[in-house]
Length: 148
Image (cartoon, rainbow, N blue to C red; front, top):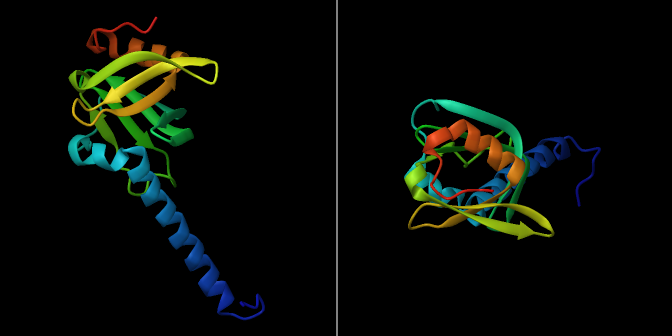
């Protein structure tokens, strides 16, 4: 057992905490589907479009509550994570032709489900108010399906 009065405790505990934090973020990148998306849609240059920070959404079983950066532009849907939660989750740009839309209800809250990647079909669920802001930013580039 560690004694907080020993100097080694103050070295080991922060290192353990940092390693645990990084492990959890790596695990979330896999369980959410972010890792799979990043292998195909990793953003390589600055995004040209509107980015909304501190947003919420859900990918698979992973909730990104108030840590999601999401944007829309001519090239596609931008997804990022705010620091310090972005480790192992690089910014993404999914082209509009790789996204399908459908209405979904989660716990009595209506929202929009986006399937990201024609082959991957990673689900991203967002609320309609956020979807409407993205739709406005994307203008005519938004996928043909309507959101209401």
